[in-house]
Length: 233
Image (tube, rainbow, N blue to C red; front, side, top):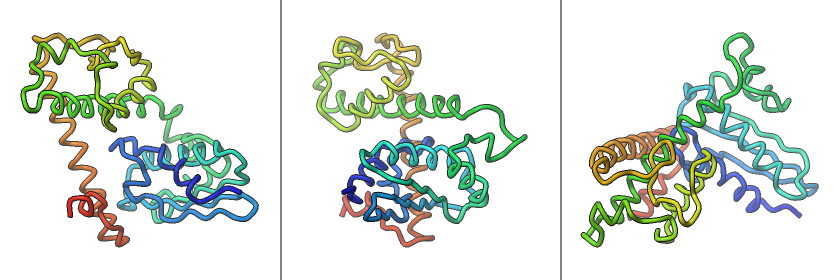
């Protein structure tokens, strides 16, 4: 029998494309119901009704595909609630159609180019956090940092997510590849490191602030507790 926990674990693999955080930890999963026969009904809620339709569609579509991959699952229903384009998105998702079917004449092709753009942004920000973690305390200097390989990296969630993003982007991620990579997958030179770190820090701060804003909006609109505040307490 399929459990709600298994479905939620599948949904945890779905990331907000702009924030690069799981929709489960962001509080975007409003409800998840699994019938005795294995049918799944998931309702998604976003911070505001005006969230960008392309991001909303990506999350709803990715959620449907993630749940459908759960072994033994029956019918899968993904419903986006309280969004100004919910009707269009829900109809397309229910039919297994693409974004252009939801908004005919208003879009061209799929959203993979947009997804890749934000994956690259997320990778830069997350690699910046890893670099700061490794440089903190003076255990490593810049020369030592750029010489590291993936095999030298610590077992840490930020490292794991960086490697997932590198794999999805087709960038080198094997144990003997550089621990930190530029946008083209090449190594970062020690002379380029200061500017790269500044860019990565700015991107990381943007991701964090936008994530905090989304959690605040969800708390106000739906009473969803902010898990980052609970951890800090």
